[in-house]
Length: 231
Image (tube, rainbow, N blue to C red):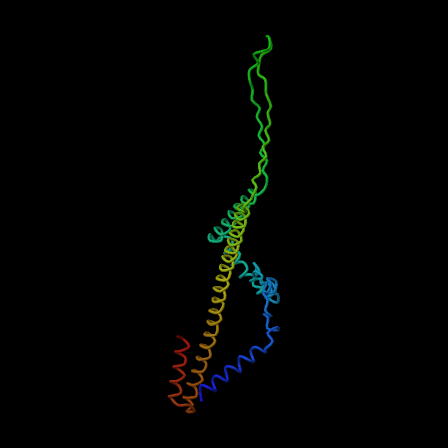
């Protein structure tokens, strides 16, 4: 019985399959073009980041801080070395760029020779002037010269970033130390004010103890607060 039922089901499926229309079953997908996944579109709404101002500390309006940072930037050996690396990288970039263009070499010579073919009394030397011009151009068939120039340019940009980062780090360290010093002065002023308050409180407490208003325990507490303020 079970085998009959299974055979009937298989036969029915075969009949339905033969009657089905396969004309509309075609692939509907398609490859996406490069323009649809371009990074410029993905990052279209992102704001462009700029380097911090080279004189960012001036927004605080502190003349002393400005003088300290300028003195540190002027005489710092690390910053001087970074600027030297920038100049070297710029020179290498210019050399790589110059190799991509035609070159013209000019040489001149003015040799002198004794006069031997003239009859006497003519004597002395004669001069021959010569000028040579040489033009050269190397065709960059495989893009090697352009690749070398782009690599040198990228290295120059990286060195420039490193130089700016060095100056920024130095200026922030000076500003941080200056801020910590200002905080230390403020803390010292607060400590002095607290000491003065503790001294006045102890004096008042002693007067109240002598008058019988406060107890000796309150006087000891005021003395402990004075000792803490002195510490």
